[in-house]
Image 1 (cartoon, protein in one colour):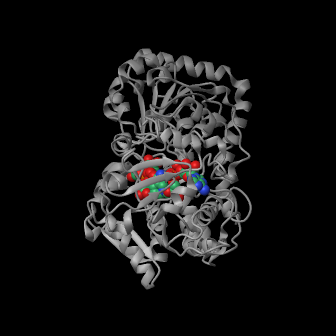
Image 2 (spheres, helix red, strand yellow):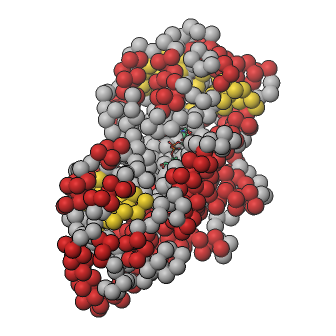
Image 3 (cartoon, helix red, strand yellow):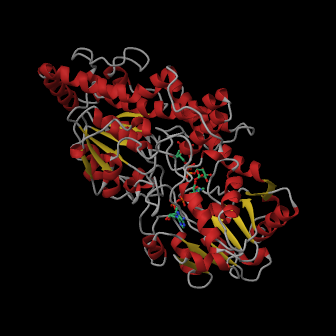
Length: 596
Ligand SMILES: NC(=O)C1=CN([C@@H]2O[C@H](COP(=O)(O)OP(=O)(O)OC[C@H]3O[C@@H](n4cnc5c(N)ncnc54)[C@H](O)[C@@H]3O)[C@@H](O)[C@H]2O)C=CC1
Ligand SMILES: O=C(O)[C@H]1O[C@H](OP(=O)(O)OP(=O)(O)OC[C@H]2O[C@@H](n3ccc(=O)[nH]c3=O)[C@H](O)[C@@H]2O)[C@H](O)[C@@H](O)[C@@H]1O
């Protein structure tokens, strides 16, 4: 909405949110979320043609075009739990629009939120069904958003494409065209695509599913690389130079996260199940399963490399956000990986340049994926062994190993010499994003694990072989080739460590038990899948909506795209802390709060 206001100074854009705190933050210099460049744009337009308000009735009744950008989180219980989208916010938004616009002139309502195909139909029914006085004519169109966190401003100012879908009627075409005209002011005409409503709704979800599928595919190849000596970055480069495939979204990593990819693949799975397409549902489910597997594999690699026990060992975690340049931690791979390490008894020291300590503690406290994965709710971890550090150096001090989980650029310029010197030896480095110079790290003295790269001989030996063969065995003193350590001092440290280990024989049972719990947690889902478990299908795709609370985002785009100042309003939000928000657990409420 800020970019719309920025590009169309004659259009009045008002963002309506039911959260007073958020509106206050939007009206201050401390925005409720961190997004590079956003504060500048907001400051440029705020008070001129960009406003933030909680007065839904006034704003919505005056708007010509209303964007609905409320959160659409995954259902936590009931039919479709863990997969279907919750419609509480949506329905509440629709009801708010209907109530606020009673007896007004015709209005265009544009879906901006990512919604299951056929949602416009449900929206239309709510809007027309709950006005008891003079009826307002609403034309529903779909205009999904494709921006990514961290690059949102650029994505909005220079989008690959804009999609607008509408009903195949004269009114539908006119509504689509009025919004298209607005976009064409800054987006080249050939990039403004218009089509039917259902294609637009489905295209958004399918686009995210394809992105997730690419990542899972390259992650699957990364495991094969480790087993064969191929290098995943070279393979990905080779694949990406094929113009039919293209280079983007082929970065292997320790799992994709964020508020969108997994959620939308699971929404798709649910829709397919609901429509009686189990083979298609299974196909997409595998994309998420592979993502879970790759996170579990990373944890197992850490454990097996460190002599099959991390109990009581300090492990530094660099990066907690689901990607760089955001404070968002929703579904971040870091949560699952940290939980895996904690379940095996590690002591974690987490550092993220932008995510607050409160948020990290909240995320770790939540039963795993309570927001999006009810299936893991049984697993709990103790927070007593999670420290949040103020700097990367602090996190690494005294650590046995470092895991890089988010590709924050600042990690590249850390003083790894100093970090190495401050760590226990042998010092392990697990690069879950392949962002560091591994040769340089090895020359400093680290034992390095790069995802999808040839394994360090040290790691191969420590884990008793590659993952597929002999994983889970503690090496004997004789089996560890100390020459690989790079010097007699480190060899002596390792020797002492292994001697200590062998003296702790009585604790072996406890270690085994901890490992079994971890293994069980990571593999439970796969077993469930194999035995045909999972939420049963039911209901129609869009019809699976759940009633509840909601939010509206209104946006009246200026004068139906004819230029002179219309009014727009809009809200934004995703399943967290939505005031009035049925299932948007408060636990994630702070997720994206940061200074702009
Ligand atoms: N954030 C992103 O990068 C993208 C988000 N989307 C989609 O946009 C939608 C919103 O996402 P976010 O902005 O991330 O969510 P968010 O959770 O950050 O913001 C949602 C806002 O809606 C407000 N809200 C809820 N019910 C309301 C009501 N009845 N009236 C007024 N306000 C209400 C909440 O208070 C909250 O501030 C989702 O469907 C998401 O999938 C799509 C593409 C990119
Ligand atoms: O619907 C949405 O909300 C948005 O979802 C994604 O955007 P986002 O989730 O913000 O971030 P991505 O850049 O897609 O990254 C998602 C995850 O995939 C991981 N990733 C990405 C790319 C890659 O090559 N490898 C990889 O592991 C990232 O680290 C991150 O954890 C889509 O890219 C946007 O187009 C879409 O608008």
